Length: 383
Image (tube, rainbow, N blue to C red):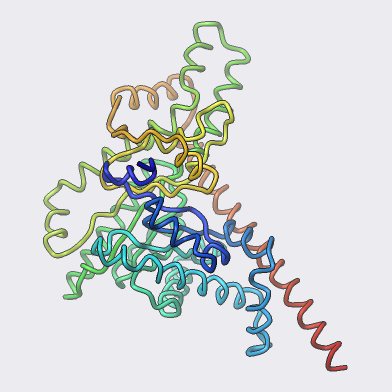
């Protein structure tokens, strides 16, 4: 059987970390749902930048939008283009949404990344997007910055399904889970239903190893042979260990009386979603961050190259709860080596927000360039 489909046998949902117009119009997504067991879609500013900037698949819609509303700016145009894609993907995944009772079949759309440090504006834009998309299986992606925690709680209380993104540390994950639970509880106090709300916490994997490995390499330059062996043994291990420890927190909280009460009222637990699962180090297995993080009540959103690799040679097994003592000792070993994992994850969060903001700016510039060409052509014809 297709290894991607077998992930679901272990309680993990394979989602696809990509979206573009052609996959929605060519039948590609339908095939992936049927053959590969895809159960959700995630998007981000970088994905949309690649989709819109590097193809002509959106040009006709840009032209049509400008004909209808000539005063639109590039941000307006982007969200119109993105919402069309999100709606189509949501419709294709709606049968899975129904069959899974709202657990899977979700499609994620991110708020503008330049709002990552403004909770009020994040909430306002998120509510507008929910209204415009008008699909029950929409998830709004909110960067899990300190300010984003407030937005996650508020939006959950408003009945919005949230994908909390850019998580790198156990501490931030715990705060995100708490924000989600507080949102559900606030909604219940108002006498409002919680059985139509789904949420995931997108925990980024490979970027952690990329930065930790760099620091391990730097320390190896001046280390003695014994310490070098210790440093080498930690390479490619910390991101997975970090994720395993977060999953243990998920299990602890999900079995609490507090969560059982929410479940009895129709609520869902916020699942951990493994993101950034493409392998950045070419010396590591190209399916490392899928094969090592398989467990119940989780999601892995898989980028295209890793998706194809796993389909070809993935080896699904229940791995998320193996070697837990080793996972803890790996993280503890960093402290003894004077490598500050908290500082690394804080940096990665800031870097992640900036990266998505830069992609968003580049995307808006590319859309504006396309719009300018269309406007100039129209003026030439009119003249």
